[in-house]
Image (cartoon, rainbow, N blue to C red; front, side):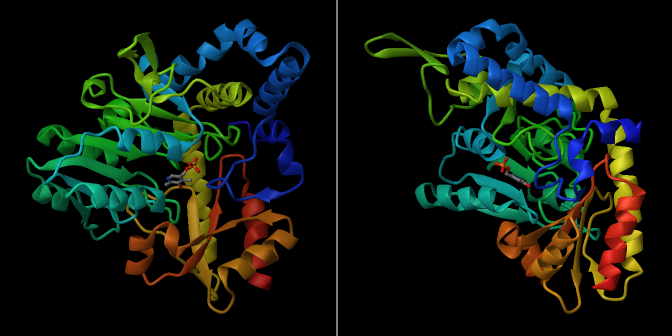
Length: 388
Ligand SMILES: *Cc1c(COP(=O)(O)O)cnc(C)c1O
């Protein structure tokens, strides 16, 4: 990887040391250019007219994303964020009384809230798979929990609050063996980890554009396996997802775009396409290797600081590095770093309640590294933390 060139294409690196890539990465110039150019064209010629003129290019977002995660183009739906994508998938499952939903300790709040919400309407069970000794989903425990009532396994791949990487591929083997639906929240992993939907063997997978993919805010996507499509029913439809063909009849689309709606942020969609192309050109394995190398370097250095405790769990650890300080709160640390133009974020208990509760954590500092960060930036972060 040519880090100098990558940084030259990332104007934000001149202003800040950005370790908030799990929040929103710095966009590279090809991505922001694609968005700005499109908006200018809309301003000059009209929104519908521009969409028509650029339709071939806009259409390419589907094969581009599909190629990146080893899917087919008709298995991709573009949505406004990962939450919208996940909700469309989750509420498309035909839950019945007595069904079981199995999920992970590191589950994201928005997902878990919806497990609780569906339980208010349908008498079903939500069960949390125990972790193994490394702190990740125990595949052996999952296998023991399986029976014919398990309707859905719903897992967060990489959580918002730690370096954990859940073993989604091994979980997929179990989902296959017991023939249940399998939904993966890959919001933190697409653009970060080599996500391959065939290897994961999931039925549905949700992702966002602005995090490790380095795309714009306000776009995301959903993958739905074409074999799973007949088992699902989108909770909402519009005139793009379905066609109104007679007074009492409509016909639903037969691809994943039945989960979309008509109006969309076209400039953002082009930005998303450009971001996926950018990541593809660099190579997702190269990205993963560089990110994890930098994150490991940061953890090793943080471990040498007497006032800092690193909190990452799991046998494979990703670019999200989390820690606390013995006397200063995570928010104080974030503010102090921000005064030095170093961006980090904090993650509070309520975002991943089960995991944080288990580990007695109220809040952590989250320094999420990307491939465009440097060893020198890590050194600067550690130096400032040391001097606090
Ligand atoms: C950020 C995040 C989400 C939500 O993504 P949005 O694009 O903000 O909707 C979902 N799951 C996890 C694990 C996340 O970190």
